[in-house]
Length: 162
Image (cartoon, rainbow, N blue to C red):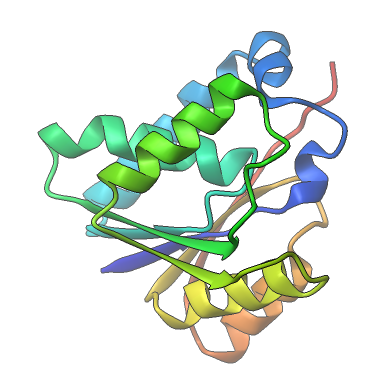
C-alpha cells in the first residue's frame, strides 16, 4: 500500500527543526511509532515532499527503518532550491535522503506560491492512504482533496505548546 505523508510549512514557521527536537524530544518517538503502525497495517511505499519539518523527519525515520523493513521511500520535491536556506546539518540530511530514496523528482525549478499545494496533490494522487501529522486545523485543503479521491486518511494531531 502506498502512503503519502502530508504536513505543512506553517507547522514550523519560525521554528527550526533542530530547536524543536530539543524542546519536544517526544516528537521523533511519536512519529516513529506512527510510521511503524502504518508499516504494520501494510504500507510499504512512502511518498514525502521532504519539506523542512515533519515530512523531512518522517523521511529520515523511514530511511533508518529501511534496512530492517521491506519499505521504499519516494521523495517528490516542490522546487529545486528547496533546501538552499536551511542549516548545513538539515541540508545534509535532505541531500542524503535524496540519494537514498528509491527515486526522487523535482516538480518546479523555482519556488512559486502553489508549489507545495500542487506537490501535495500529486503525492495524494500517487497514494492509497494519506498520513497527516500536523497542528490542529492545518492541512485541511490536502485532507479535503484526499477525501474527494476517497483515500484513507490517518491524522496525527501534534501539540507543540511548551
